[in-house]
Image 1 (cartoon, rainbow, N blue to C red):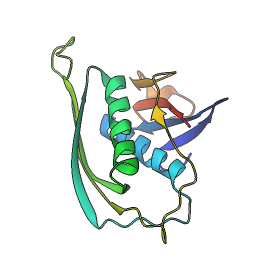
Image 2: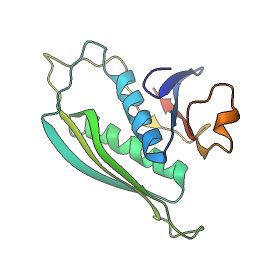
Image 3: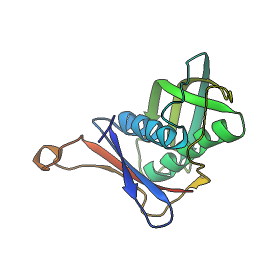
Image 4: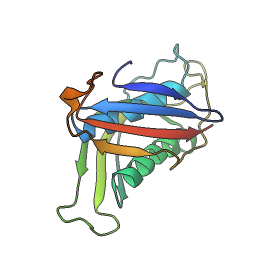
Length: 159
């Protein structure tokens, strides 16, 4: 495992599993894991620019799909490469079931515009799927043999 995430083998696509002590940490690790798949290891992305993004969902899983999809939009449509997540806050509704957009990720990300001289893509990710998608709080993470955090998420990415 590296930086709170690991790559999962999948027959046609590629998966990621992220771990953390908070939901925010899991969303951060998942984002950084996805970026590490897209960019070649020798690409250096600076933190020249900051952007504030918000996405909503009806549950933690849909929120994860919206979060990662927004980051893919930033890469492929806005030519903005993520280098770091400066701050991230996740709002969970007090009452469940909640309104359809009750879950919210609000984050400040840093990065820079794509430059051919310093950035190279290793992998094109077409989208985030709901296949095998999980975002869960572990009941007793300390009792697990491979304790990695209180939260865990898993996602399959379409390549």
